[in-house]
Image (cartoon, rainbow, N blue to C red):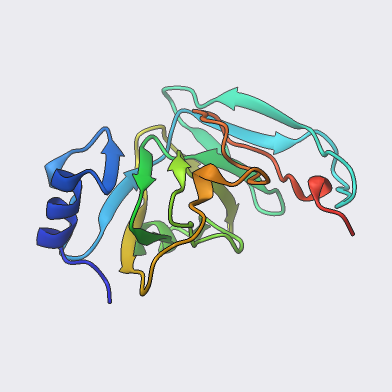
Length: 178
């Protein structure tokens, strides 16, 4: 079951969903619009290796915008910091974003109960497109969880994306044993 606008507001009142900054006009019928933060990143090396720490280079989006190019993976970040303590958050692209040929996540659209952070975006484009800090980039949808959660994400000792940040975070795949 997806939460409606009224239910999202009720959960914000209870403190089970936190969105900072929260702007009422960003609340849709059953979603909340999130915006592109001011930082992007690209990987330092063109060839990546899943077993090693692939470093990224952060940069700030200029006021005049930044031209995204095809065949490059950009890591972005949401302007909004969120916490979700009783629901499963899903981050999806907005139709207006998709119609510009912008994909905002390669695979990681689902958050965990207890995720408390900004969202790193895995951005790719079909053709060159200029983006701007603060532009609408996606929407959060909240699903009800059946049953009690044993271990919330923010309390897991092995959670790789728990460090609060305003910048995109690179893959931590290298921390896994395989």
